[in-house]
Image 1 (cartoon, rainbow, N blue to C red):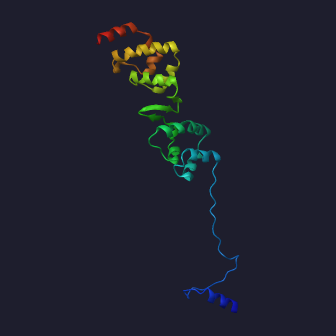
Image 2: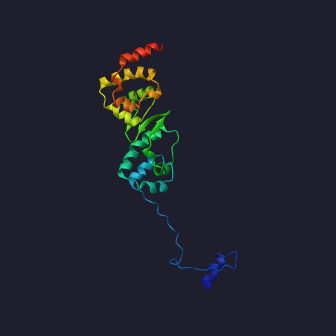
Length: 202
């Protein structure tokens, strides 16, 4: 008992109403250790590529429900999205809203389309974008580009020459959609007549 009294006197408590209790080491409360959640390496790399922007745990909740096809689309979409978009969503919102399925725009123009994998960095797409705008942007750009790709190099030159007159002489309300213009071969007909009408306009 003397040992306990000496110990209590040496480490006296300010509040005498609180009992001083000695406990064996086995009975002492242990500090909880929070185990850090581990993520697959593929997701860790994605989070790093995204600049750690967002809540990792929440983003992973959406990521783990993605298919392999979705993840492939993200790998293609993400670099262009982060480079060209002025507003970047948090990663969890990017995944939840399936932003990787949407086209990427820059200066009002599509620079990447996930569905048809159109990229402005290819020469053919660059030429097509100019022709599309010159025509008035009528129709479905993806379908029109597919029709454009079916033309030979010589046919594209003839089509561009035809469009340069056709777009000025013909009113937009009378034009077919651009994909129909290409598919039905409008560019093959009436070149001389178009040039005559063009000359009379000036």
